[in-house]
Image (cartoon, rainbow over all chains, first blue to last red):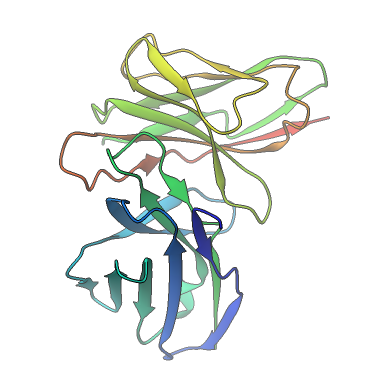
Length: 111
Length: 115
């Protein structure tokens, strides 16, 4: 099993739709989790951290399910500008040594 | 403005040549990382450094070398031993020790093409 797995997509959704991505991880002792956004031919940028209690930032909601070892990202009221690849990132125990990036889920929001 | 800079943005190299990619940060971050990204694939860790004068191999270190003589700088050399060096190279930094939510911040990347 891969350390971090994501559905590569693409997810093609109309503007205004709600879309959700999941990311599963194999190391149950993983400590922290993040969602990054990467636009085509650009660097990844932090979208949000994922807290145990879940967190929300505007139209974006991130959740962590430790029992089933996955994190999720929900995007409400999708905008054309949300089109990008969303990367899941998992930190191992001890923090920063070797984080693992998922291969990303591609989202295309269509008019 | 604090951030991470990488240069050059585009780099062309002939086979058999070594080339050095620059990465500088003024975020006062202790940890720095080099990743490689190939088309349609995820990021793979080449090297990382937690403190000055110390660095560790990542998952794909063969054919690469690094140095960390200053906190702000973490250059990556792609040697002729790297068999397939054409890729997008990303440098990142983070400040571990500030709790477990130590996210990484990325530079804009260098796109290396071997001719």
